[in-house]
Image (cartoon, rainbow, N blue to C red):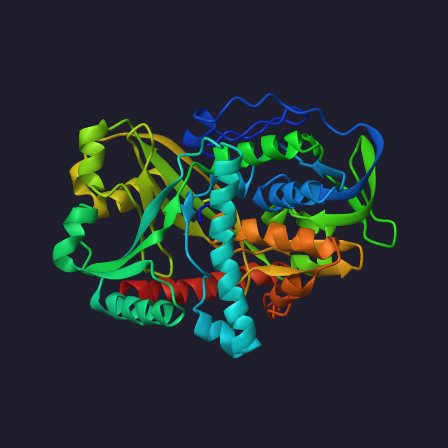
Length: 443
């Protein structure tokens, strides 16, 4: 998944929201977003059963689930609904986790690993149900290709295919080199794994649709309401510059943008910057010639590239990961050069958009769920699989608050170590590790 809000330096093509007048950084998503008037910031003291910090997918699904159970919910968002990762990601809905279930079984045992697999499948079902039940206009469609750039990748995909079959998953099949052109017009691929039950959507419109669904259930959402202090004691609260929400329960759903509100869990995630470009309008014929199957595509490199077609016939191409916390220089040009390695037939095409930001990863690349106290819950670190997994994690947060924590605790048992290196040394350590993986991708 591509994500979050921009890095520390302003760059062409990405707009920085003005203080007290929050808006979305410019992207193809923000330019094609459904109408969404600003919501008023928090003012004064309010009370709710649950206060949710963050109006991205996690916070909004949690709010929907809780409101459906009869809880009063107030959501506080520093900027706009879907401003971070939820409104700027690659829009790719990917089966499972960033690690194989066999690896997860080594950490938590076979039974819990099987539960986690079932929960990841439930995540896609929840997403599809939310879109259908609330008529969210987010261009949801199914079909996905994990593309192999070299024989080693193809063998890794065969192993993954066998694992999925052993789990009873019937959505995948191997794709050999001669079938690739019928799916995507890229000559670099030697084959791949097609997944009929992964897919794509318009990520910002999905977030905005979730917000509208939550409000229809009575949830209050305050934008421009950056939380500056939380109390996660017996009577939890969240305070902004202009007000305070006092609640029975607190949910921290800020992910890469939670900042220093909760230092205990901050060390368990690392914000990673990743980016996208959007071409000019290609027209239906030329766009469909690039991806005849109109599916989402990602390669199998550790530092991967991913892309899909937009509803107005552009190519949306993502990659360009930065682990340093700083924006990469000449970002649009870098991504364009990478895109042309896959699609040299687009040399005459300009790029109309460039945007990006932060996704939170964990050291073991699985989501991090847990409690800071009996009254305060959190979910973070989806590691590139957040479009789908946020749906089930929102449900599990609501279940736990409602006194049914069994499924939540399966997730909470996943081991999450802090990133190595104290304070400012965390980022250099990660950069060194990722440099090794980049070199491996080239072999």
